[in-house]
Picture (cartoon, rainbow, N blue to C red):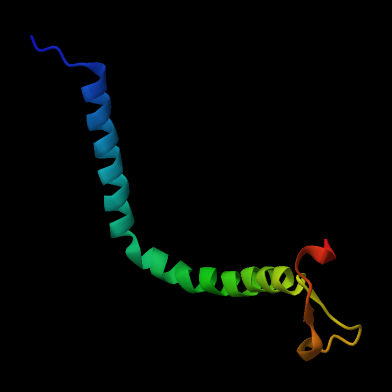
Length: 78
């Protein structure tokens, strides 16, 4: 009889689960390649306006939104 500790068995199970996940991801790499352009477009359409809004919030802009005349005010807008 062999006694296997719970930690060693759990470690082997975790390692095999990780390798299974990585193997399945590698087998479906074409699927990820099809989805990647959509994710890139979503990042451009969603993340860039959020970034630009946060950046613009640190400036005092005139009512006409002439962005070349903006003045950095830092946290004074808050």
